[in-house]
Image (tube, rainbow, N blue to C red):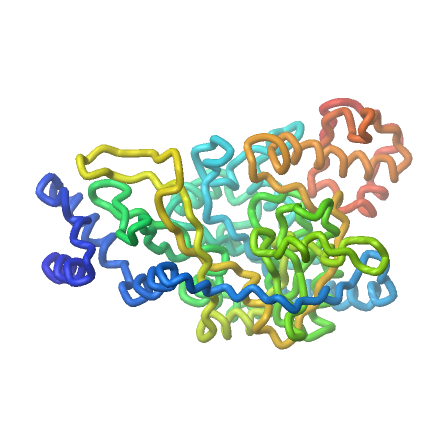
Length: 462
């Protein structure tokens, strides 16, 4: 679209204010603003804003929910068969890994892609490196190159690609690491006006992890998977270094069930824990966000006196690529509304960082695809083995808690191998320990490799 067309379109839609500083811009800045404005889909925007104005929630919160069926930690009778199926799929080159990593580390006070944040208890390895080493070790174990697809955003794409190039792709090979951008969508203020993030650009945000379906189908990733014969994607998010990226048991259960999208869950630590609730709604598996779960249901107890809705989603899934193709090409996921503090350019041209919520962001969530699956399995995992997210600067789910949980897991491996590990009064490992996936992917592999005369001490790295 040319300049006059864009200006006319914005005037017709009552958004001409975004050109308020036009006469102050140089030619390059004018091009930037026209390019930014050309991305706005006013039909989409009007529908979103009208829904908010009229109190229409695109997310229908079900009221008649029941607990979803779960393959629990104690349900091991089919584990052997599932594991064999998972290993067969891996060795046949049918499995790829998919990382959602479109955000920055701003909540951690970190300026850069969140995957570049350092979490190693001893070595300060980054999140990206932890994931890369696990994928490389899995590729070696199963004798196949496992491709890694990484969804970035315009916020961090260039920095992410540079980080991997500067680190020689951590030995995975450039041809096996595919970065691609998700869509960006505009934010609006509380009067439903588009926001200027700078004089030559609109405030936009990534379209959420649910945008992965569109991005996989439209950014070349799915085409690459079809060429390679990839049938299953191991989906995970960047902030959890303990995620078991390649899990033949999980893959095998998914394959065995002919599932389209499957999920890992863990037992909630307490009713208000900020994880999604996996439930059944009219026979369909669904996830209700912690912020949307009715309080009486959140605290409800079953006949055994335990939480009725105890299964918490931890954003680990298996996606069949045929399902990705179906959702990305046809189905529409609902849009969630989030009121946020959005920096903006005020009427006087000053950059303002608001102290309270001043705008609205729209995003989609990947788990909203679960109700449209024809088949899905849910697998319980042990919290201490697979969950140590880095979300907050301090307190729960912080870098400090993540490093402690990592040391705790490695301490358990050492103890299982017959080593003595010091612990504090709360049962946490009281020293820093780090075991690379390239040394051992799991406790069983570690038991076979643990040096007989190993001295356990603070700062130990294997």
